[in-house]
Length: 293
Ligand code: ATP
Image 1 (cartoon, protein in one colour):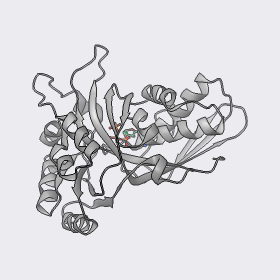
Image 2 (cartoon, rainbow, N blue to C red):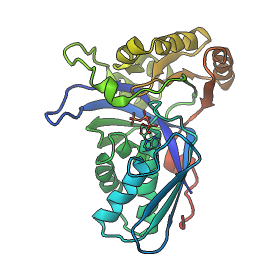
Image 3 (cartoon, protein in one colour):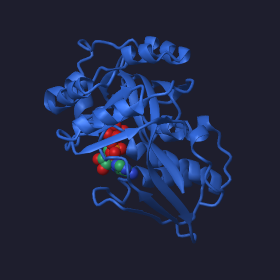
Image 4 (spheres, rainbow, N blue to C red):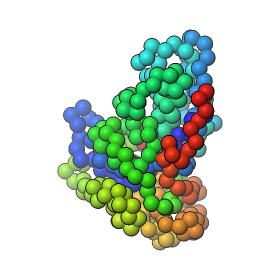
């Protein structure tokens, strides 16, 4: 069983658009202890990939990012085994928390181990980029400054102690529909370097001051509930609140668990899906899964 943690954007900026239509990213990502669990079993040699999940909302064919990861690794390394992939879904879908990307990254890690491919993290990240911009980060799932099309990962130190309140409004946001609306001439760029420096110093207050997502105005214009949730989080005591990814999930940061719980309780009148979590690093905070998956 491979743990696939959700990611949050502590900052998100896009400095420019590449000619091929993909975005250049400049973002700081972290992972939290809200995770899917992905089990990968290899069977006979008919090459069939079967995906099952405990969620009625997910595709279980080639549209599933976990399927795409398995297919990509099998075709790249000429493996013919059939595979059963079971995803126990806990991360909200189409929420801006990278659930699909994290499942795909979990499949890459699991098959790398199971097939003894010995691929290093950089190779897994390059493969992951063919699936989605967040997959390279999710391969490592450890606080990082992410640039390029999502494949340049500079790891950052562990965050200082903090609690994170996550609120997922009852709407799903299509990432491409938000990205299409970016007007590069108007983007108010984020000071990512200030956030990176604050994390390197372990300065909680500076981190809170530097959290920013340049896509929030776009998503909240379409879904005003995003701004409303941000305001409510701060009103109930979060030190900062921001949207993750293209939304609609909003997160708030608190120094203490009691404060985070207070914020979560306050939000329960506005939003039914609320979590209180902590930042985690895949390799240091989660026990390594057993060798046989
Ligand atoms: P991103 O910002 O990377 O687009 P997200 O966090 O907003 O991701 P996901 O939960 O990854 O959203 O889902 C995005 C889309 O991907 C949904 O339309 C969903 O149907 C599809 N999808 C494919 N595979 C998965 C998966 N394993 N888990 C969740 N969604 C998946």
